[in-house]
Image (cartoon, rainbow, N blue to C red; front, side, top):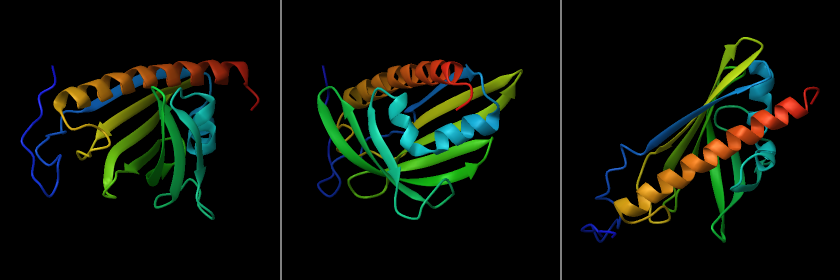
Length: 172
């Protein structure tokens, strides 16, 4: 049963504390950290691996550097939506972090990828963190719990698909 919390008329989700909404998943891939970084920071690749991403593309003149913007199209449970994100950290072979704008438009979600050398490959660590409550993400803790759990499953699927793709495409 979902409990609707008291709302501030100016910001319908202001009472939701999202500080505990964070998920981290890891996977080993058969690529060095530089190659793994190049694959993931080329945002147009994400549709190859993510069950939720349809496409992503840097805005004109932008690329894998801090401050760059990109747009995406996503899907989940029959719904589709557009997003706009900004790269926060872009250190080849080490970290690729971006935030996704919400309806306000303020950053509501942070995605962080880190790349750690591990034997003949890389340990990828992917972290999703809610930064702000936003009506598009849900208006109750039950909504946010569901979002977190579905996102965790999607992250696992993405990492497995990425690791498999890298193994099957060693020269790409």
